[in-house]
Image (cartoon, rainbow, N blue to C red):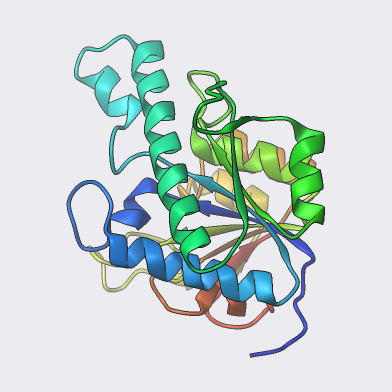
Length: 238
């Protein structure tokens, strides 16, 4: 692994499902702790790291809406789930010695700072990991879009999406063993083939701000640091 990181400031997008490990619901402490160690490895390289966490392991707004709940209410519940995951991630990072701040798009001063861009930038300048919770603070927007938005606002050089698989495939590799894995893709190809990497508004925002997206497996120990160094197994969208 190279000692020279390819990027100075990055945003890591984690799905809520990534924190479940092999479970069906909630948080797997062992998985959360391993992700915290992977983030620490990147921070030790001198890279400024911010994180956006989903909430699908606790509550998913679209599922609630599909079950008959009013969409805005369901989405706000999903945002609160992301804050729970953010606090869990903060706790795991601080236990391994990484100074961390959680900022939320919905003000909840008792547990986290409100999202203030300049304050977040100051934390990053000081070497702290900043975790952004509560998505964009608005219903009808996913945490993928929140990740693209925060990456743009923070001036991140790349958005890294940690998933269960080591890149983007033409189909679900678990269901289809013949699925093709892509080394590199264009934003346009993701749109036209509807590859489902991230939602279309997130892809559009990263394309507009010229932020490449790296999709890699968060379950492979050390893969985050490898991706930041331009090594390892991943798909890059640019």
